[in-house]
Image (cartoon, rainbow, N blue to C red; front, top):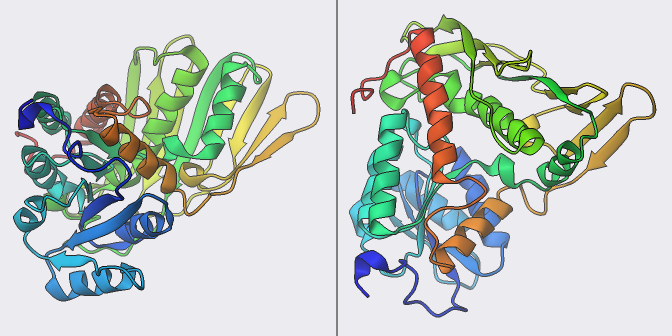
Length: 354
């Protein structure tokens, strides 16, 4: 069997800890590191960042007492050439995801990459093609789909507990200080509200439709109202997605305002509400049109990242190149929606021609 045909971790002992490498030791990476440190069967082996001191501090912070210290480096190639690395987690700004994910796949390293996988569908198609050609695992880290609460919500939707689906309404907004060079507002870093937070509104829409119908109906109409920052990225988007027969998903996402950040799933005979931070929800309420509300509470085991990490390791160890929970085609479909929304909003990135 050639290297290109064999899973990256196939030569390691089945009971050996899965050794993660991390690129981009920022705030979201801390959540990943905490989950890895507290999970059985894996450890953080290496951290790579552009700032040597910050990277060293991150490695020291998450090196468990009594174990080999986490390696720190500033050269991704050095990390990707390390035979001890079983998988790579990418947590850089969106505009850097493509180059790091491509380099990891070309090095034969399985990739778990933060959402959005890349800024546009064309770049996503290139990564998926690379993963499929080389038979190397690639998954977008849409952790919401792995949360325990969502597994129970799926049962409610499949059982028709709120009757026929009528619509969705959601918000994900937060007020951020305007910094034209920061990751949220810089087009060179693929800034803007859609890629940073709106992806959660979109993946929730698709997920609800998939549970209710078994598939996502074709999008019949798309309406977008945008507020752009001085740098040209989207500060706020109001989006209406029409799937026919009056079924509409409406959402607002923004990095310039506050919002309740809830998800409402509206049905013929009732509704389901995730009353706060729906993308990391641990509580849901089913409210029938008549009768008593039913509440679900599903706390995190660690911090919410644990199940997507487990799934990525399961897939790699099984020699799979994608997860059935968030397969390649699902990631590409969301990227396609985002391309259409950005086009209607008049937002363009320097790498949109790639």
